[in-house]
Amino acid sequence: MFADDRYWCLMKRIKGTVFDPYVGNPKQNGFILGKAVAELHLALKRIEDKSDIFEADFHNEFISWILPELERCGISLADGVIDSLHAFFEQDYMLLPHQLIHRDMHTSNLLFEDGELSGYLDFDMCQRNVRVFDIVYLGCSQLVENYMDKARLAIWREIFSGVFWGYNELLPMNEEEMKAIPPLFLFDQVLFTAFYSKIGQLETAKNCSEMTNWVYNNMAFLLRDYILS
Image 1 (cartoon, rainbow, N blue to C red):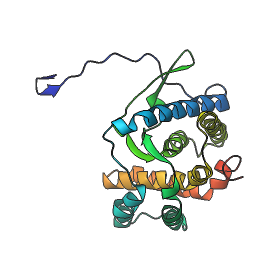
Image 2 (cartoon, helix red, strand yellow):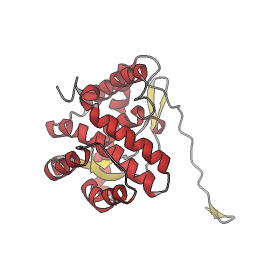
Image 3 (tube, helix red, strand yellow):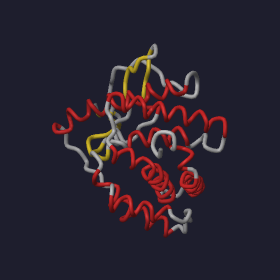
């Protein structure tokens, strides 16, 4: 409804709250999150041919605006970051399963009630893209405020291990998807670095670039037990 120069929408509130995977059993919490993403992917797959879907292309974004923005602002990344992403996009990216994904997958967009998933929020960024990106985005969103804290980082590794386990139990990843997780972790942070630079939030962009470099230099530690083994 349009009134008083505003659009109004009345919706029924979804029951449930956001839960903190750092509280309780981190691997079990991760399992719950990973399973929730897999359930959503199965549901989205069933409706994608009935929807007018934006077809995303991370390779095109990387070339067309991300790299130029990094250059424009003189943002320095660790040696090897950009070359590794070029190699990933040229060799492996298009081999990945694409489908309708959430694209903004973090714990604030998942609601739970009495330990059970009760709803998903914020589908405004939904697009057809590589499905494993939702898992990567979820992992990065939990890492960003915790990677400099050794205790929290150790818990994060348990959480993401659980995410990996929960997702695969319901919707197994193929070999190409598992191989793509490390470069997509890097790309996610490079994307945020360029995005915040583009909108003028230079301090946040600097923080993202520092996390990008840290992820690149610590990838084996982050993912060695179940991705890089």
